[in-house]
Length: 132
Image (cartoon, rainbow, N blue to C red; front, side, top):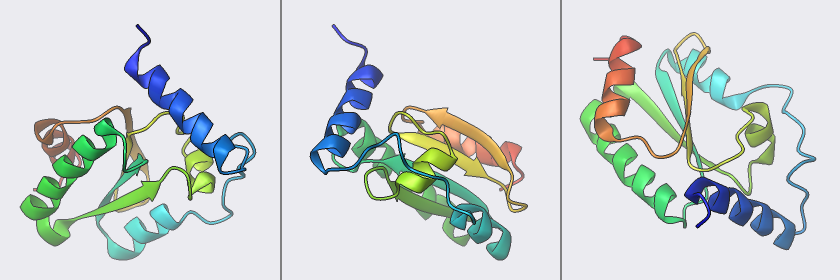
């Protein structure tokens, strides 16, 4: 049986081909809206790179909704559509979904983690980043 992340990567590639785009040709943006958003808000940002319809992406979205409710306006959670936002996918070298990228208030990528993270793991990472 194929590893679930390999299956997701293959699904992502097939979706990209079906939509008529080449997932390997995306060029990074000249300015990074995620870093800009984190810096301008002075808040930690969690970027959730996903498709929205796969089971792992749905599970991650549910967990991040719980994070939103628990942390309110202390943290920004930004969903990144893996099909529509290929430039950000390339910029962060995201190859599989879901992938979470944690960016601190200074605009630094602190952690990039492939696969769904549980609430406790996200809470612990935010705590390490100084978010209470």
